Length: 114
Length: 115
Image (cartoon, rainbow over all chains, first blue to last red; front, side, top):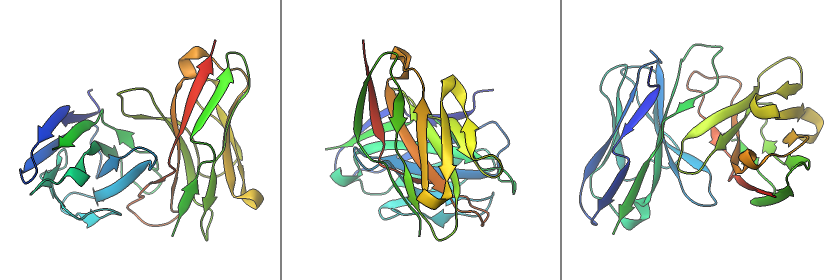
């Protein structure tokens, strides 16, 4: 049982390049989330998927797109990377039932845009 | 809209001393409350949570937190710090209703434990 896995662990992009961050969970969770972490700002929600087939914007969605590929996988795409998107990206999942509250986090992807 | 304020971006304590990390929330309805810990170069791990019931909640590694509705606070404490407690700690809230249960995080407190 690996929990939440993310690939890649590290990535360096040039401004304008595109890439997709991958996230998968093996806990049969319904809800999945993408956050970015910047120094002094905690984690901010980019997009989330409350259940398979649905996605919604979070606090900072500009410059990103997401795909809920199936129940296990939730990817984050940067179409044209900008230096402001240099950050650590975390994926998380939650069972999604009414009385479930905690989210389980992956190890993160460190992205640098030059 | 909800918000979370963590007082003190850096806290230093001596090994064996009391750890107190402060968290205040702003919400029209008391939310559900969490503390997460992040060790260097790792993801976030849940320390403890308050949803309903007893306002003093115990978590892993000897940590506990008390929900005080009148003070809109959820401070994290540990009676005796250990070197292994050095990490960054995040307070987070999620709304009482709704299906998505998005988390709103505080800006984090870096805990240093001095020998």
